[in-house]
Amino acid sequence: MRAYPIKDLKHSPLFRGITEDELGTMLDCLSGTIRKYKKDASIFRWGDQISQIGLILKGNVHIVRESYWGKESLLARLGPGDLFGETYACVPQAAFDGTALAAADTEILFLDLKRVLTTCSSACRFHTRLIQNLLGVLAEKNLHFSRKIDCLAPHTIRAKLMEYFSQQTRLQGTRTFTIPFNRQQLADYLSVDRSSMTVELYKMKDEGLIEFQKNQFTVC
Image (cartoon, rainbow, N blue to C red; front, side):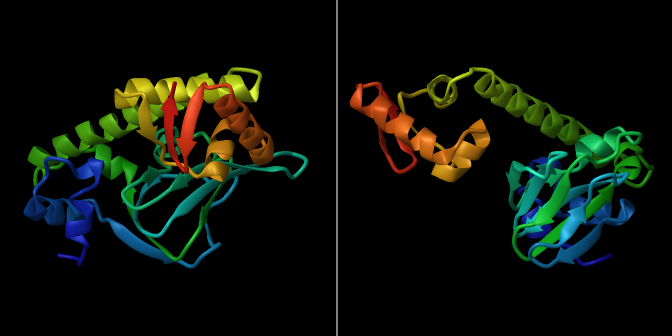
């Protein structure tokens, strides 16, 4: 059996409901491969045909897309436990249309999607659970992107912020909530200029619409 960081992997949503013993056996069956990347190294490049899904063990990965004119957009910041590449692995005729970069020294477990989706006699009991978990991860990402589209649809910065804050009150069940972004990350998420967004936040605060301290917000 190969040496895998089982204690770290068992916390990933992909392996929910699978014991440590089962996980080690299953990873051997799937021929999981761990690769290390230095900061700023490319993991996937524009035009790559992807057959593997990546699970981040350590470090961070940024998914970046560059326009025809060279303008770069940060699509996602990913950390330990996050999956990436699964959409393109599921659609093999679709080339990767961005760049996946190591934002720090990073370790990634790669799994071949065909082996993940094909059950075998030695692992069928918990392999089925793995497939169910993968579908759950894909569904959760689909919900996330749907919510992001709702935030990007409004034409003004204020309307984008109000939609995002409305989502957070519903998801967290309270008018006071903490968001997982700093100011730059929130601006990137909403695809707006950070300085302009900060000005709008203080206008909303002055008008009594919101209160905030760092990344904790209250909708008034």
